[in-house]
Image (tube, rainbow, N blue to C red; front, side, top):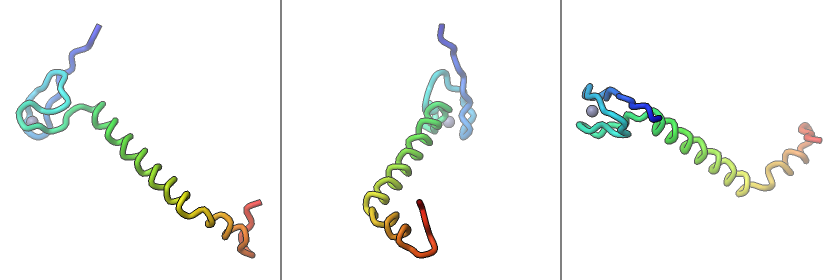
Length: 72
Ligand SMILES: [Zn+2]
């Protein structure tokens, strides 16, 4: 059984039934879609961080060798 959801557009006030974008003004109104986009953004940030780590593989080594910073 599917649930029909009416989402009111925050921009123009039109009620849209099971739509990701407002039929009137094309504003993103789907909560699921918004969350998915946020998650995507988060993943992209993590990928950038991971890439940075790969690009700087000596950072941990340098810290290890620092006289005032012991990891082990
Ligand atoms: Zn709208």
